Every structure is written in structure tokens, then in C-alpha cells.
Length: 392
Image 1 (cartoon, rainbow, N blue to C red):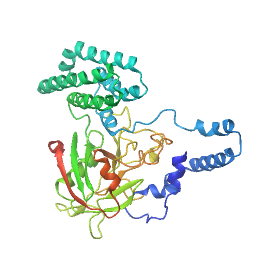
Image 2: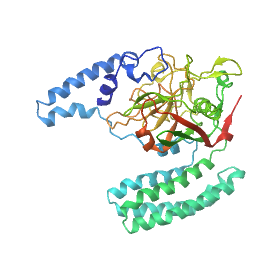
Image 3: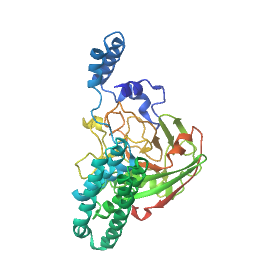
Image 4: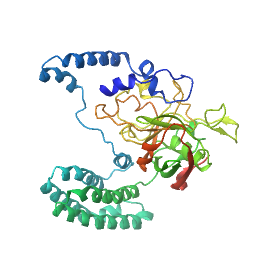
């Protein structure tokens, strides 16, 4: 609840007609009355708790806290968001992701068993793993599995020698190859975009964009598997050089960075082929659904509190800006989320399901810490994945 109070107390005086980031005026628009009531009650309880016995006073507040921490690592989120169903490689992924924490807790016996289990699983199921991909990817998955096996050797050595400081980097290296293996299992793009949006660019897969600014560079991994229209819009504009030379027009160094507003009276992108303002709809995929939902926010669908496949949980989350009360009028402006909270469960941070996340900053997060209002984007360039962009 502390994070909800924080959101509600931010500057609420921005012009509601601008395509700005409306997290600053959610108290009147997104926050349900019942939540407002709960926030007030919680605030009163916190004040009263100062004057009461600690054990009794904090119990009601603690009951409202999340019982499980949100996944805040963008790389884990992106791996989990891949549209695959392979229990073997998913188990390997999960076990490797837990190793840094296990090492910090010095659970060396468990780690030794885990790495042995991984090696056994990969060895005994290698034929099955290779057979599970399309014929044209068998060579690729064979190579990636070989690289994964090689990456596990120094990790196992670090575990046996109880080298706690090396486990994190070595497990992440192995996970890089796990991600490549998992990508090999995607047989085809999992759904068709609704006909009314088929005339828009679509990213049918992943892509990597380098954003170079006056303060350094950052790499953005775009996820077209879960937001093909919004990611496609962004990648198409990157290829056109649209973002080169633009500045960050709104910023809070502890919360967000916003850019993509061209000079002049126009707030977004005008398609020269039609002479019209090109917009994209809100596009959010709910877990266990094959395709994203389009055109409606979680609030409008009564899904507030539902965790989307691409949540606002990681520092460096990249999402499309839309005008207040017009979720289907995003265009060129986007924002980078800079806030993390252990007190707000994912899905309850007032952003999830109400804005389209289409990627994450996966390298260069230190650059985001340096950027301020008025800083300039020198260039935005496609590093990989351009072949996955479908243009109408």
C-alpha cells in the first residue's frame, strides 16, 4: 500500500489533454474508490501504530504486503514470456535462476545436487530436445545445447569450490544459452493480430535496438511475441530515424523518462503515405491466453490486479505513452520505467494492464541513471531482429 500512496501523492496537475504519462493523475482516474478508502485507512493505521505495541500494530499492515517478491530481472521476464511449452528446458531455466540466491545463502549441498540434476537432464534428454524443434533449427539447437553444456562446467567448478562470488555471473552466462535454446522451440508466430490492426507494422518475434544518448547507450530488447503492434510501431520508427535528435521531454530521475515527441504541434507520427496520424491500440497479454487483448485496459475489463506477461516490474521497462483516457491513441512517444517497489505486488502498481509494455532495457541501465529532462537521443539503431518486422 505504501507504493499506492506514493503514486497518488505525485504531481496531479499535468495537462490531461497531453499524451503524457498519466501516472501522475491516477488518483482521480484509475484508482478505484475502494482503493482510496483502503489507502486512507492504511495511512491512519500506520500513524496509530507509532503509539501502540509494535507486534499488535503492524499485523494488519503486514497482512497487506505481497507474500512473494515480484520478478524484477528483465532477462527472466523475457525468458518466461517466450511462447514455448517444454518442461525440460523450463526446469533447467528455473533451477539456474535460483542459483545466485542459493549461493548467497551458502546452500552448497543443494547447489551441488541441482547442477548434477541439470547435467543429467540435458544428457539423457538431448535426443528428445533436438527432435522437438523444426527441421531447419536442429543444427542451431544442437549448437546452443553444446554451448550450454560447456557453460555449465565452470559453474559446477565454482559450486564445488564454494566460490559464491562467481555463481551469479556463471549462472547468467548459462542462462544466455538456455534462452537461445528456448527461442529455437518457437515453431511459428503464435497468433494473428486482429484485422483492424493488420495495416500497422508488426514485430513477429524479438529485436534489439541500441539507443545512443548524450549520456551513453542502452540496449532495448523488443518483445513482438507479446506486443507485436506496439513493438512494430516502435521498430518501424527507429528504422525511419524518427527518434534521432529528439529529447527527453518529461522525466523524473526516480520514476520515468519520456521521449518521442517531435517538434511542432503534432504529438506523434504522421504517416507520409496517408498523411494521417498513425496510432496503435493498447495491447496486453494475460497469462495463459495465447494472444494479447486489444483496445481495452485492465481497468475497463475489470482485471485490475492481474499480472500481465510483460509487467512493470523491472527497472528499464519500456512502454507506449497514450493520452489520458485514450488508451488506443499511442503513437511515437514512449517512456522508460525507473521505479521498483518491494511493497507493491506486480499487477497492483497502477500501470500494469493500463499501458502497453513492448520491451525492456537489457544493457546500459547505468545510462538511464544519468539521463535527465532535456537530454538528447543521438541515434536509435536496430542491432538485430529487423527481419522480424512485417510492414503492411
